[in-house]
Image (cartoon, rainbow, N blue to C red; front, top):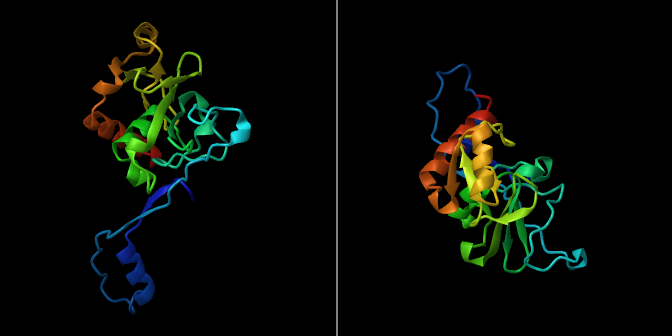
Length: 199
């Protein structure tokens, strides 16, 4: 499945298939996972017939997959985010959280690409649906608003006043992109992992 990252204990799986259970013998100790199988969601190429400029943000195609979590961002368009590479290729995300995780290690999620090739990163405005430059947006962390993973996904706002009004109703703290640390992203992603697996 493109865009979905799957972890499998490959050594254990291979041995089990080759050897099987040898006539009721004592179970073998579990082997540690030795590899991670990644099926990467490919970027969507720029379509010159779209009428959009090469580096402009664009609508999320129905078939696009988030390279971080495997979701279809078009199913929750109010939370979507995207990066546009310098050749016009676009990678779409289910939320600002997935975008920010992606930006920490672009090559891990899109093989052969580097952060330096990104011409623009965009998040969807939570108050009107337009695209905002990710670096200029104000984010709210810890609100009651649940994103596509049923967890807080850093809703984005065009300015501090809009974000403050939202936080007054839904709770949460205001953050700029520069204030969102790798530690915070790891903590938020761990919470999403619990929701993904029904915890």
